[in-house]
Length: 413
Image (cartoon, rainbow, N blue to C red):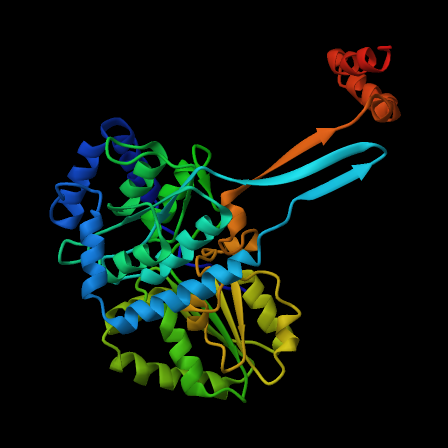
């Protein structure tokens, strides 16, 4: 069975992004202002969003939205607090090893904007960092069409308690957080989704700054459905990810041609009713597929090959597919568990691996902001117990000082 791979970035994306990164490294704020003029229609007097602007956004925001963001933040925070690992002690033959989990000192969260506001992404990136214990958490977000960061995003910043918000978007924001400018201090870890330019920038600065393993690019979904599915529900879930815009992926898999036809008919109706029809059509044109398979096992072969960001299983016996999941960012089971729940209130971060990186990467977690440090303690007796093993291996590697460092200790009276 030959299947299409997810849409790959254009060949020149990496070279464009590399030049932007080099420019920001060399010219700092001057480069940021030039890109703001070029892409955003103008550069702000200050990239840092003032506390007054944030407070004004909170005052002008609807009470319902503030309440919703606080509720979502509570659920996200509670989930990530449950994921914190306790200090572990390991002891064998007198050698004691403590495993300490220490947060990085600073983290930068990229929150997309422009096409739409994503206050939820601010919550989903900043809160895990804070739960991990990161002291300095900053946010970079591009301006909207009015030349400002969307007020809802600023309200989310207030709710989550981030340190600073900067109105900088695109690959240049990633470069600024990685290397610093006159206005923006460099951070230790950068997280957050974005378009292919943002995701590529994170890939290129990796190694100079911590980057989660996932390529968090344009949104993706695979829906697996059988004859028991409500076609309208499957259709809207395909559209949910497609409405994020071009470059994404929306796949439907079934072992019933009739089911595929009924769902696609609903997709057409619902897409045409959407105010984001052009974005939806763009995604379907380049990354929309309907796959007819022989049964649940082959459906999962296809899904695991694709390694989607979101996998939605909408069949009578979901366990037939769930037990075979190997590659997926997040899995949603049954008609009443839409991926949209994961986007806002389930608890785990909605920053998920895309572009097939779910083969080796996971959702953003507190672990992305933590370092594991090992502390080893032992006495002379314990050292003597492993001396022969240690010195034999060290000498085989011609590292005689390693062996001598042990012998000097066990021979000492």
